[in-house]
Image 1: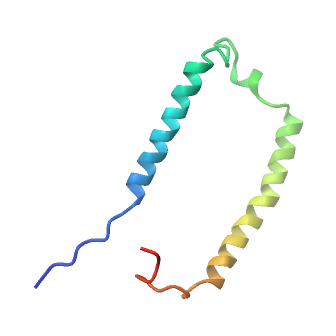
Image 2: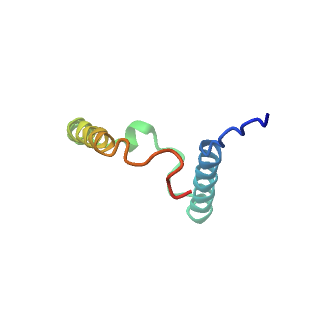
Length: 89
């Protein structure tokens, strides 16, 4: 009997490609603007004011559940529409 081939996982090449692109753009940015962040600046000096951080937190707490709910709803609506092997591959 012939053994079935394992389906290839595309996650690892995708993650490695994302890392390569990120490192490439980071290197490009550092080579073009080496002093864009002064070495003597601290994390607290670079942070936004607390009022701005609270505003962004409230916005994120409102928007992220909406995005997740819409994503779950869209997966629910389209469940079973395309069977395995009927995609574009």
